[in-house]
Structures are given as structure tokens and as C-alpha cells.
Image (cartoon, rainbow, N blue to C red; front, side, top):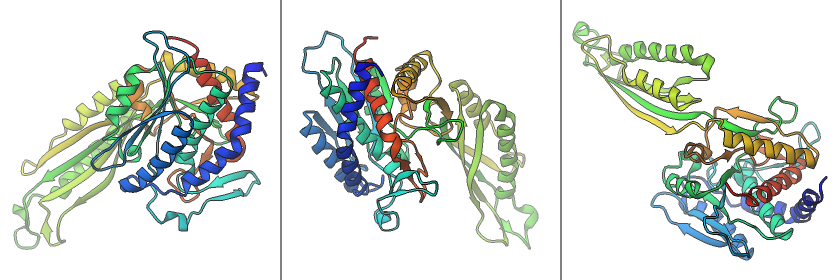
Length: 402
């Protein structure tokens, strides 16, 4: 192991007991997206830790969600004009409601294969990533000054679409040299992805289809009715054909929720469906949008209204992201492990930063499984090497200019 890498590894190792203690504290602060006060309690705790480490913290209050928390770690040495910061990106909200800890308490227990794990709501997605960021920054500063500012942005609404935080993410990403996203790694040991960094993510679209027909008594006046439910069924068959046509390209168009009608003896005048769309590229997004918005009814007595669009643009595999991954792969080898790359159908705030053209590397957080599920957990043995890798990447990127 090269001396600099070894030094960073040792610094991370010395700080690991504190990182684990802080992780337990943060998991104990339940922070569902829809409870702004709860998310702010988590932000308050991270704010306290960051200020104790000498960081400058900015809080951006939001009307319906918790604060967007912007944490700046500045180098001690003066910076050349035009120096761009490094952006570390995460979120403090979780999918878990207040009270979940009673059913999913913090545990430090091995899994059925005997591998040590940490369990609890939000431990994987993504409170461990937040603590990995703080620990990695501390290790870099312990081994020398930061030659470039590092900003850690923690959003309060990532799990519900990042509607209020997106502008802050994009504002900082436009200034940044690169973006490291502390979401969980892709895959588990023993799988092809095997704790991979994510170099591509699909874009996510949300659409709503509303069909209006003509209500009528199903027994007395059936022929004068125009069934919105039957018309929606015909449209859903066309939507399913979009997925079939795009399956070789990774395009999925999923009618996930449908509804309609009032009673079984009434020809239904209304029906609707909510559609989830996943696309690998912006060009795919445009094609699917055109196909969905061009849908028309077969029954002239029915009308259709289609609303929605792309919520998160695709994070495409760019040259800048590949360069970041190749650097990370080399550093991982120095640390004694193999780092793979992977693409995923899920989205993150990294989708926004990559679309701006800022090199973005995702999945740099912990290795585990069960995000959004009752068995949410992470593999403890992977925290040290992956945090050391994060520290090495921060040191490498902050030492260079675009």
C-alpha cells in the first residue's frame, strides 16, 4: 500500500469507533420525509458534529420539508482564483415512519452467514453514507490540508422526489469539480455487482392518465354509456407494448396504480392510471414521452388527458464519470480490494448533477441490503475499506484542477 493511502487508511481506522457511535445516534433519530421537525432533528445533530470539526454550516428552511443542510469544509491555505469545490451529496430523510424503531431497533448482530451487520431504519439508506463522508473528510484533514473546498449537501426530501432540494443540488453541482454521491453501493458480495460504484442510473418519469366517458345505468341504459374503464384497459395494452418494444434498451413503462368507476351497475364515466417510466438516456425519455402523450381513445365517446413527465433525468455513463471510476478502481486495488461498476434502474440526486455535465460517481456509501425493507442492514466489515477509499478519492480529486 502506498504511504499516502496507508496513512489515510490508518486515519479512518482510528476514527471508526466514533463513526459507529455516531451512526447509532443518527439512526436513533427517526427522520421520515414527511415530518420536517424530525428531519431537522437529524440535521441538528449533523450540524453539531460538523461545526465541532470546524465546518461552516448553512441551513435552508423549506415550507413543507426539513432544512436543506449545506456544510462547507474550507482549506486552511489560500485558494487560487477559480478553484472549484468538491461536492459530497446525501440525504437525511428516510422512508420509515416515526415509531419504526420499536419494530426495527438498532442491532449489531451477524447475519445467517455469520457476517457482522448493523441493522435499523435508514442505516443503509443512507445515514451510514453521511457518517462515512464526515469520517473521510476528517481523515484527509488529519493527513494534511484540503487543497480544495469540500461541501457536503444533505437533502431532506430525496426519498419523495427532491422537489424542494433540487435547486440547491444543481446550484452546487454547477460550481463543483466533481460530485460523489454517498448512496449505498450496488449489489452484495457474491453477486456480479459486488458492492459496485454506480456509473449510470436510469431517468424516472411519472405520468397520470385520466379517461372520461359517459355514465349510464348498466341494466336500463347500457348502450348509451361510454365506459372509461374499458377505454383505459385498451390504453394500458398500448402502454404495455411500449415496455415490450423497449425491453432490449432497458426501457420500462409500468402502470403501477389504477382506479375507476363507482358501482358495478353503473357504466363508469371515469378511470385513471399512474405510470412509472424508467429510461437509460435522454433520447429514450423523449421518445417515451412522445408516445405516451400521443395516445388517443378508440371509443369516440371517451376522452383522455395525459399529464406528467420526467422527474429525474438519466445519469448517463460519461467520460468524466468513467475517469472518476477508473481512479477509484486503482485506489481500491491499493487498499486491497476489487471495485466494480454498475448501472441501476433506481434514481438519486446524482441524476441531477450528472445531467449538468459535472462528473458524478454514485453508490460510494456502504455495502448492504434491504433498503426500504424490514431487513435493512449493512455489512460492518466493508465500512473501513470503503471509507478509506472515499478519503483517498477526496484527497485525489481535491489535489487536481479541471
